[in-house]
Each structure stands twice: as C-alpha cells, then as structure tokens.
Image 1 (tube, rainbow, N blue to C red):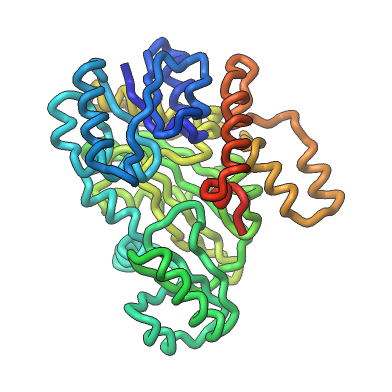
Image 2 (image 1 turned 180 degrees about the vertical axis):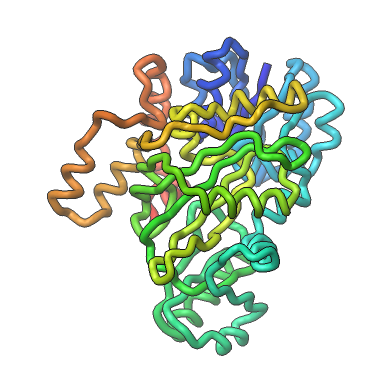
Length: 382
C-alpha cells in the first residue's frame, strides 16, 4: 500500500487516480477531517494525522507508526509542510519503507529562492537582476524600479509584492519581513507575458528520466499565482536550462522549475524550483507522462527507461475553484467570457466522470474555507 499525504491537493488526487487505476492500494492522509482525496473511489483507506506545522514531532511519530502497522510500501509527500519533516527524518523512514524524495539539505536548498538563484547565476542560467538585502538599510542600493519583493521560502506567489518606487519598497519590505522571517530578496520586475514550467523526474544518479513542459495560460491571482489553465508545449531551451540546473544540484525524484520569458530580450529567466509534485500534475499525465507511476517504478526497481516524449497541445484546467476565481477577478470582457465558457477539448484537474466523489469533497472544503477566517485567505488572494 502507498501512503500519499495532503489529500486536499489537486496533485494528490492525480497521484491517487494514477496509482489506483493500476490496482495499487492507496492510503490518503491529511490533517483535516474533510479532504478532497478521501472521496475518490481509488482511495483504499484514509487517515487523519497531526498537523506537521503545529506539531512536527507528533506528525513524524504518527506517520512512522502508520508505516510500521499498515505495511506501507512507499510514502509520497505532496506539500512542503509534509515533505520537509519527512525529508528531515528520511533515514529513519527508509528502515521500514521507500520514500523517493531528496535529502533534507537538498530540499531546503531548492525551497530557498536565494540559494537556487545563486546556483543559477554560478552556472550561467539567466535570472532576473536580484538583490539580497540583509536589512531595510540595504534597500538604498536599489535604484531601478519597478521591483518585486519575494520571500526566500514561500509557494504559490504568496508574500510577493510589486513596488513601483523606493517608498513602496521600504513600506512593504518591513511588513513582508515580519510575515516571512526566513528572509527576503528583491528582483527586477519582469512583465508577466509567458510563464513556462519544466516538470521532471530524475533517478538516484541525477539522470533525467521523464519530463513535460507547460505554458501557463491563466492564473489566480491574475498577476501571478497557481495556474488555472495551462498547455503542454515544446521548448528546447527550457528543457536544456531546467535539466542543467537540476543535474548540477544532483537532484533525485520529481521537481518543477519555473521560468518567465523576458519580453525585452526573449530570454527565459529562472523564477524558482519546487522540490515536489506540482499543482498541474494532471496535465502531465494527460499528455502521456504518468509521473506518479514512473516514480513508483523508479523507487521499486532502482531505475526506469527514459520517458522524454509527451503530447503537445494538451490543455488542462483547474475549474473549481481556481478558474472560477480567475474569471471573477479578471477583466470583464467578451474575450475572457468566451474563453471561460469553453469546456470542450480540455482536460480537468478534478472533474472526471469516472470518479465524481472528489467533486463533493472540493465543494465541502470550499464551503469550510469560505466561512473560516484563517483558511479564507488561502482562497481569496490579492
């Protein structure tokens, strides 16, 4: 049986369906009692574990005990909040099960945008002009605007703030630094034109075994956030840059590398590395690259053959609530309305007529998030 964490996430549902359809028993875990993945017909069993953010020790002990008592063959952590503690205690878990993730040090290096950008700069991968301020006094060194404040450790564009002048930078820097004490960086603003993602699987020798490349078509929030509609494309330069970076980092397992095309010089600039499965995983699977099953085979057999071909032009949509929120926050015009109302010729992250249970789960959790003040901020973002 395979244990997958974070049952509420779209990519978790993609993992559940991928493995479940192949007859593999999947146990789904979450710290919430109502979680979308619990409702899938491919979920063999579900568990509710302690919140790893609130009590990491209790979470690790609970998962370790589950591994021992349930004969868990493999653990696939999804979100950072589970990935980090599981990578920290990876050697202990490996005594009892397989856990195909990088070591803790590499996970944390990838999560730290400052460290990954410095690595990219070192090996010649294009990046936005980046400043690494140690305090608010260092901001006087920045003379070109606009810029973006970015937390060194965050996901989904959380904590990112656009600043058009020094006063805005100074005011927002103090505010964001209190919320993200791990540190901030400042980057030149690259207009949001083309955002390209490189999605890959590497073996234990840091050799590329599978990949897809996707172009973001819509996001929520509209100025930058998780994609709500995206399409597979061919982009050789992105493939070369993403592979070069992860090989240099001695990567193992899955990862996503995000680039933004700078329309001033048409050069792809590195944004960040995510050391885990990505929200748009359903698109990769729809395009013919079944990452969850390939990861499973890789962990069981030690290696797999290369899977570097995928279907181009496949689109996949995160309709509820992602694309609905995009439509509500986007410009109200006929083009956006027509695009939003086009439902044919597109795959879906959550909707699958063969597995309708998760629709009930996402509706219930959306209601919970809507009426919970602390959770609501993760849905309605600015």
